[in-house]
Length: 168
Length: 168
Image (tube, rainbow over all chains, first blue to last red; front, top):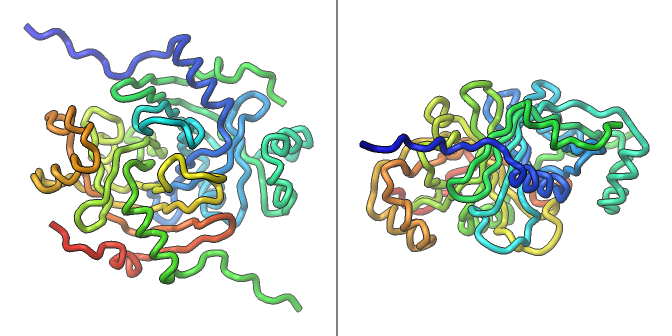
């Protein structure tokens, strides 16, 4: 008699929360997946992203770019957050977090702008161009892949611990 | 009188084809964006991918994974191919290629299996598990981002030069 096959997707625990918090704290770019308004197919792009004051992923996007037009048409998107480039080892065994998010334009906010520039001073060149906007990518659910065959699912009820700081 | 604003998305030329060919030749992993069958929202994951014999991106996927079930339900997907990790510099200025693709299960083929293992001997551990399958991610269109403000669009008519070798 065979033992039942274990569920390959586990529930979050303290260790997996620590991994997720590390990924979110270190994120400076990520891959965004939005829905191409013309075809309905996924369109992927690398974007600049940092944790907002409440750890919600915050993106700085040019309005002219395809992803901005797509998010305006449909705010449902995916976000893949991985360890910074240059980390050693096989990328297929490194932790990465796949979030389903809802994109919202963030209101102009001097504190948000200052926090962004503190982490990325080069953004000074374009952050005030009228075409650029901050977007909050509010997590709906998540899947942490912590290496080959090790996956952890985060439902809406599991996400608040990722956002411990007080929102603006 | 203002000059007309230049189109921010250029047409491919020899230099951009060379960049794309380099990215495709070096790719060993990429980010896949598929459509979550439950929500219709984009779902992103890092996958193992190599150029197939005709340079079409070839993925080796576990059937149990969410992306395999999603591609079975809807073969429209996005693929983001970037330079190998460890490349120096700012990831936002490095070249990356965003493809819209159509996913097709590839028939078992000893030559394809051998070519995959030659580039990734560690795959020996799981390549023959019954759950694993090769998928061809056939490009439909593409967008090369070759650094800040430098984007090149590839339509269906522009893609054949990326696939110069004879398909199996």
